[in-house]
Length: 130
Image (cartoon, rainbow, N blue to C red; front, top):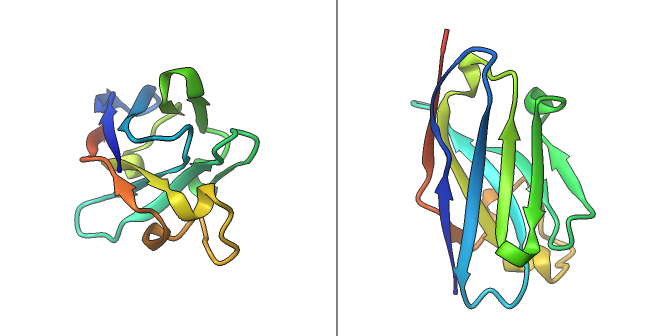
């Protein structure tokens, strides 16, 4: 089973930037399709960004397009989320998650669906102050 550890969260002012990292360890068997999700207080967890195991396919939720960039360094087993022009509504706990279903190409798996991810990190807090 793969273990995921997020880092890079913190307190930043509106318009600032942060880079989150998601480091994988354990029985990774190579890169895994990975997603970033976030959960704000009192709200449900929501999809933020996705990157395929090869890095060729990426997608973002509409509210972060043009501001966030997901990338991966397979040699380091790490996925990054570069967040620029942060807004107060980006405040949340951010989680990375890996998906065996998406990695192996299950047709029924959806990268926006947190139920299709089987390994989760502990989360990292991002707070954007105005």
